[in-house]
Image 1 (spheres, rainbow, N blue to C red):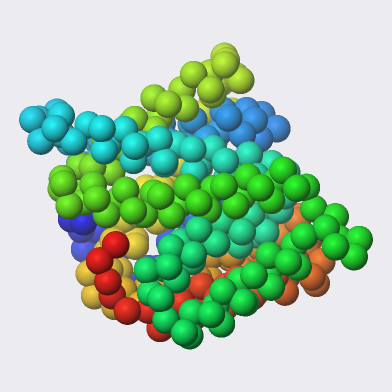
Image 2: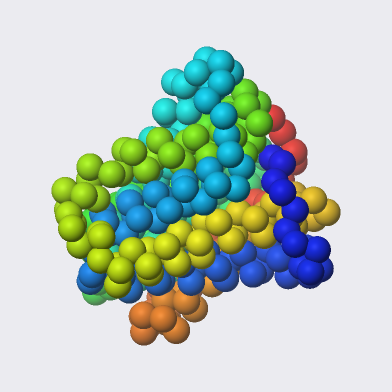
Length: 288
C-alpha cells in the first residue's frame, strides 16, 4: 500500500513507529469508551469512521473511475466488514474492559494465520489462545458480561474478514484508494445507526471534537505510522510487535478509564499475546 511519506522531521526508527502506532490505537479505544456517556457506542463509532473517511479522502483524493465501479461489490463487502468490526468492538468495550476485548478480538487474525499456516507448532499457539479464552469464561465465580465477550469475538471474526477483503481490494485497486472508498462506505452504513441512536447529540462540539480526536488516534495516526514503519521493518517483526496490542489496551484502560483487571484476566491477556507473537514470529509468508 502506497502512502505519502511522513514529514521529513519524523526520523524515528521503525520499531518506535510501530510502538507509537500501538499506543495511539489503544489510547483511541480507551478515549472512545470515555465518550460513550455523551454519544453512546453507536454515535462514537459513526464519528470515528466518518471522520477517518473524510481524512483519507482529503489525504489521498481517490477518484470515482471505471476500475472502482467495476469492483464496487468488493468495496461494499470491505466497507461492511470494516463498519461491523468497529461497531461490534465498541459495543463490546461498552460491556467489558478494553484490554479483555482486544485480547478476545485478536482471536480472529490469530485463527486466520493458524489456518493458513497448517504447521504442528501452531497447535501450541492454539492451546495458549484457548487457555486464555477459558480463563475469561464465567467459571469459578469469575464475572464477565457474556454479551461483551460474544461481541468481542464477533469483532475478531470480522477482523479476519477485513484482512482477507483488504488483500483482495489491494490486488484490485491501489491500496490507499480501496481503503478510502471502503471507509466511506462504512461511514454510510453506520450513519443511520449512529444518527438514530444519538441524533442532534452528534452535532455538539463537546461530542464531535473528541470524536475527531478518536478518529485520528484510532485510524489516521496509526495507519500512517505503521505504513511508514513497514517500508523497512520485516513483516514478521511487525506482526510480533502488534501482538502487544492487548497489553497496551489493558494499560490504556487502566490509565484513562481506571479499569483494573483481576490476575485471571491479566493471565488470559498475556496468553493471547504470547500466542499472537508466536504465530507472527514463526509464520511463513503465504498468499491469503
